[in-house]
Amino acid sequence: MRVLSGTQPSASHLHLGNYFGALRQYLALQGQHEALYFIADYHSMNGVRDAGERRRNTLAVALDYLACGLDPERAILFRQSDLPEVCELAWMLSTLTPMGLLERAVAYKDKLAQGQSADHGLFAYPVLMAADILLYRADLVPVGQDQKQHIEMTRDMAARFNRVYGAEVLKIPEPYILEEVAVVPGTDGRKMSKSYGNVIAMFAPAAEIKRAVMGIKTDSTPVEAPKDVKTPLFQLWALFASPAEREETFARAQRGGLGYGELKQDLLARLLAHFEPMRQRREALAKKPDEVEDVLASGAARARAIAAPVLAAAREAAGLGGPRSASPRR
Image (tube, rainbow, N blue to C red):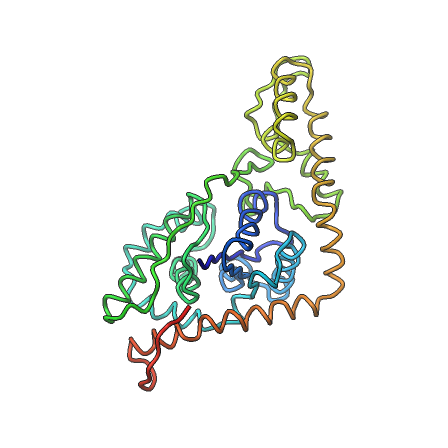
């Protein structure tokens, strides 16, 4: 099975939501399937408008993935824009995608509600996402429940292309719903997201991490009073605790006698310890940017070997360019 996922370089560091919500699971898949992971710098153009910032963020995502355990020998890591072929396929798909399908996209409505401008790139985001998936003939696309709609849209676009041009060129992908994905709360209680400004970046400077942890929203319940353990602070702390530790600490909190300050200090210590080995690997890799670029270049070459016959077959089916015989292969 071929698995594909992408991450936008919209921040200088990935955060706990990225790590516990997806990255750990994605990296586990590299040992079970043929895995492709791309850094979605084209997609980032909807929010990041500075070239230098985009390049820094792209390198940061590559460093984060490699530090967290991505193995370039087992998985393909590449930069989306190193294969501009994806834009050509996106255009082909856009000529067949009904406006109504895009207007129903929940993610688009959410972005508008958050104040993002209604640019065409944001509106057409699902088409480029579909091209990302279809160009590499992905079998499975790991997503959370909130992103399942995008995969359904991708399936619709692929089926329509195949039907219109009378050829089974594009593989219909399946969503791979990560049932055990943690919904990581942010410091304000909402889902952790850079757009909300409520993140804890796992490789940020220690002082910045401390400020974020100490700023986790809590109520005014005194130390001696019972606590509600279904709150953001306890949920974040539980990510770093064993089942036995969770049981003991939750029982203590519900009896009363555990203060929020004590739990925040313990969370901070656990968080820093958990990521310290990865932080050290990341710092070492950051001193060798040419080696990271080599990984991305090699990944792009491997990805292109998969993508080229798919795009050639799509062009042939659609009557683009000179006639030639082409068929996608795995």
